[in-house]
Length: 220
Ligand SMILES: Cc1cc2nc3c(=O)[nH]c(=O)nc-3n(C[C@H](O)[C@H](O)[C@H](O)COP(=O)(O)O)c2cc1C
Image 1 (tube, rainbow, N blue to C red):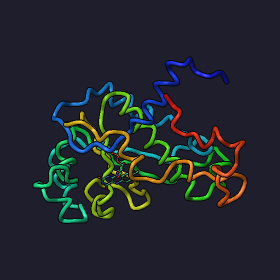
Image 2 (image 1 turned 180 degrees about the vertical axis):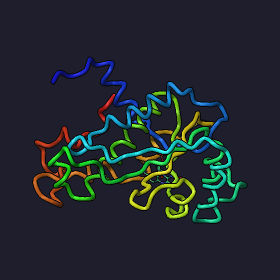
Image 3 (image 1 turned 180 degrees about the horizontal axis):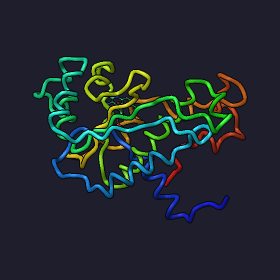
């Protein structure tokens, strides 16, 4: 497998380092050709045994979005006065996307048949991440709305009981500037503190030969 040329590699890393939760959306529609690319990126994620467990519900109908708002868990998320409330993002974003996980058709794959049930969930998370990165590269913002009552959402979207809604995403062109990338680094642990060497708890900072692993932040 050959490495991509430097400019392409840089583009990929840049997308990852600039992935952000969108706080608000403009009303501008997403061209279907771009939405199709996002869905293709999502479905390019690895799925165990080539048996994709994901299915997507694209929600564009304003009435449906309003109904989804009624499934929000907290009053604060529903309050439209809060600038970036979940309800506001659901209604403003031209596209909402419910990403679901179901038992795939395993009849043609022994690997998929023998997989643990959570393996399907991991595949779906990979698909979500692919879509989120593709959206960033296309100049689109994504907001993952977690505070939704799953059962109510299932009923509104007509999702069968055998299928699990995993993520509810709002997608559109962001209004306002996204948070600066440094925000995460300021608030979170140092990335090197989250990597051990050879055994749990063995800090890479204590190992001189592991200096390159410690020097995270070297992506241009
Ligand atoms: C599984 C998951 C669920 C999330 N749910 C919410 C949510 O309900 N509301 C929200 O504002 N952000 C949600 N987020 C976004 C993160 O909170 C956000 O990415 C984090 O605050 C970092 O902010 P940034 O993306 O602007 O750097 C979620 C992210 C993930 C991965």
